[in-house]
Length: 430
Image (tube, rainbow, N blue to C red; front, side, top):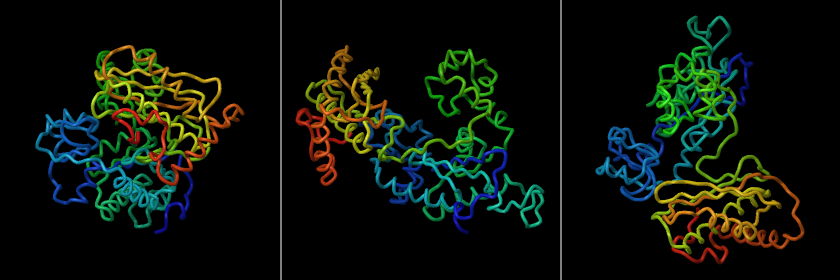
């Protein structure tokens, strides 16, 4: 069988057919491929128990103990002290993710990455490629009970089987008329399952689910919904837009449409898997980097060093895209997890750390109103575009080009501003 792209579409049906492919406990699964002795054992990927940082993946065996992705390793160490803790290996996981994507391309003309362990496939119009032979439901084998839905579901089952057979990785998949419904279905299909939600029953499928089941509703939103008396997605679907706006603000219309089963069938913009993504000329969105300290930091030299490093990093990425930014945003998180952001829009767009760093340093001084140590610093460039450079800053642009040339040959960390040479947190890639 050729790829879906080669075979082409047979003609779109009224409803889209979107598949969310989710690699089950992906990092843990890769670690078990590399070390089969880990099979069946409680495994946590992210770092040592009790260390700074968070759990990036947890096996089903350790989830029963309450450990989950995003939890601090300190808390995980208390809940599962006897689990096997492993460091994260981004490059290795990225290689396997790309191999999964190569298999997925054989089944769908459009495959878009959402994260390193999740991707969406647009199978709209591919029904005939997988055995459906027309409106009468016949697939050519005499089975009149077959349908277009069954053909797509069968193809996705073949896809998950191929991923398991060829790579040894388990996966789950959801198929629906919208991206958000497909994502919910993939979660309901776990582990190692495939779930198809036919067009027209989306709202009924969503109605009994707890509010946290809906993509985009996190713990804060869940708490607000419970406080307002909403326990299920069906209850949210019956709510007025005015009531939901009190909880979600500008996101309320989108949430309401989604829980009513009216999500969009568009895949949206692709996201890179586990890597900075800076295609030349890309001016949509923002450019950001952040650093969580291994230990909360109070030393001014260390803080200044990291601020400078973040500034260099985002500016370097902007120059890789050949764009500039008008707005810079500083993110600061204290040791007690209180987080604040401050933004400033500049008169002249820039991609030079020499211009940006004094601004960022001033923003930090004004923003830091508490004496607590710092846990995290972050920086974001936005309001991006291709702007003409004023002659006043030509020397900065030329210097940036020289620095970028050195980094291209010898690596990012080979050259930096003198400010980065101070402090105990220097010379680590954000």
